[in-house]
Amino acid sequence: MDSQRNILLIALMFVSFMLYLNWTEATNPQPQGQGVTQQAQHSGDVPASSDASQPLTQDAVSNKLITIKSDVLTLTVDTQGGDILRAELNNYDAEFDSVDKFVMLKNQPDHVFVAQSGLIGPDGIDTLDGRAQFSANGTDFVMADGQDELRVPLTLVKDGITFTKTFVLKRDNYAVDVDYTVDNQSSKAATVQMYAQLKQNLLDDGGSLTMPTYRGGVYSADDAKYEKYSFDDMKDRNLNLTIANQGWAGMMQHYFVAAWIPHSEGEANLYTRTSNGQGFIGVRYPTTTVAAGSTAQLDATLWVGPKLQDKMAEVAPNLNLTVDYGWLWFIASPLHWLLSTIHGFVGNWGVAIIILTFIVRGVMYPLTKAQYTSMAKMRMLQPKLAEMRERIGDDRQRMSQEMMELYKKEKVNPLGGCLPLLLQMPIFIALYWALMESVELRHAPFMLWIQDLSAPDPYYVLPLLMGASMFLIQKMSPSTITDPMQQKIMNFMPVMFTVFFLWFPAGLVLYWLVSNVVTLIQQTMIYRALEKKGLHSRT
Image (cartoon, rainbow, N blue to C red):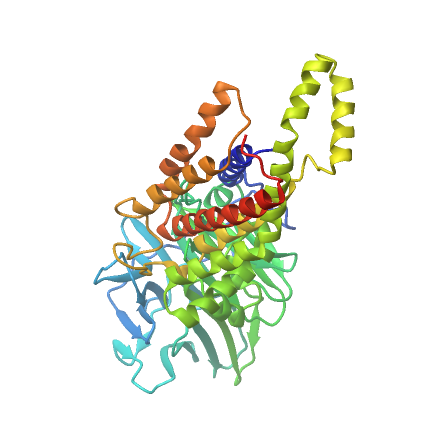
């Protein structure tokens, strides 16, 4: 099999892979977890407690807002309910070279995405009449230089019970602890139930053919380390799972994720629901009874920030899986680690991609050598195969038998040029995902005109160079193809790939370009060595 056919195979597999990604997103089957129901539960922002039978009202946002700022997060919290209405990531620009910071949680007319939590139940403070109105000792809370932790309490006294909702932010950390303290100084026991949920407009999944990213719900439960549950899934039926051990519920979008991690004693309930064009995913704790004269604490952690794998793994088991490498995670994850390690030495993500590509192609060199050696041997047999076809004619069975005998005699594997290629494809695909899912590449500069490796090349230089390198690979690999149609298809492949790569992020195109350059170097070395051995025939 000659190199042109190998290139065609790569192209067909790559395009098929991209189409498969979009097909699976469109036809994603519903998870069949236990307890999934089709019946809607309750409308409104606050989920009904286990013994409630009517929906709670959805209140407007109050004007009593406070700001909580750490070194990496700026949160806007509504004292009515204590919901996080806005989360600004201080270290991430909204757009490339923008003075505005990226806002993950927001409460805008065209896009609502907020993190809510509260206490429901017989003695809860979030009731059918509305959300709890807390009081705060100020409006602006800022983590000071040298301060490692910022604690902001909100308080409410009701029927002899003091409820304190405390937000805990830590330096260089996107995990926000939300703690409820219930100090029951009344004359009777109090029963409450904590919930924590995310609310967002029912948007489309996002992404495109060249960037098949995902926007929607995600969760982890006892029987599923990591599952997606899209907005379409939420509209079709509500999720209702039991978390006996460790789990979480979240919503994500490409490089960023928000997730509630419960810390409940006993089984928690993980749920989704829809109401008024909005989707909810969250966790509901078991009821807690606080005896008279005693105190109880309920708490959860909210991760709201970029997909930083190491830090997310410290916050909750499997939260790092939101960096979704697909079924090739066992290859992509080490590649991402290697890329990060290289960056730690060179300090430039573009240079790190180049070095990583050389390392990967170097490791795969034995496969590449076997591929081109097999192709050279097959080309040497072309005159004998042509003579055999003329002699045998249309007798396919006899032709097949004599071909096998010839391959055996010459010690040639007819699949030798194809099998190494098939073994390389998982590495190529895994590296594609590793680069696409790396938040570190977002707005990361390379050099000259490439100032954002996560965006397409503004001048299309890298795609054009990639197409030219692909054309050179074809020219260096003489073909035995005589069919005019196949020749046209092969000649058109570099053009098709160039157009396709115009919309790819510059980091991915850089990888493919460098990979082609390495291929040219390896191809030249291998062919020269084969020519010295008399194995390579340029027919």
